[in-house]
Image (cartoon, rainbow, N blue to C red; front, side, top):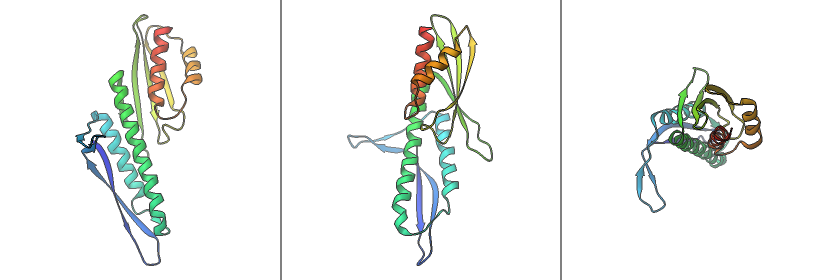
Length: 189
């Protein structure tokens, strides 16, 4: 499911502009050919989107802008934020398709928190590595907190960490690149 927001503005004559933000759900998106299609995400990815959208709604509901001239910039920033969430959701879906992965909701009352757990295996060495990424609100623009746990076999974690520091840089697709680098390392080690 693709998630959307409904944003309304209450204008006052000389005072601030107040935003009202609530979630809406759009099950349809348009392809390049103009056809309509339903977008489906795995259940845990849909949960991620729903939780993040609800967090944005809570954060921005009753938000005040100084003047109507700020509405355009507010909407552009919000659109970029939602676009980043949808891009992240598509990346999670791709990782789940390519690797044994699950997205865990570790949200508390105070903070929205998700971790992506990916199990990667080396066929030639029968080694298995569980990689857990803490996905923060700043993803994909900052490095991720990561935990590497060897489940079976022997893996040179120090060498893997050096490879990741050298080659896995933040940006869109950061999680996918990191998982691919780990998988390649496991096959070459």
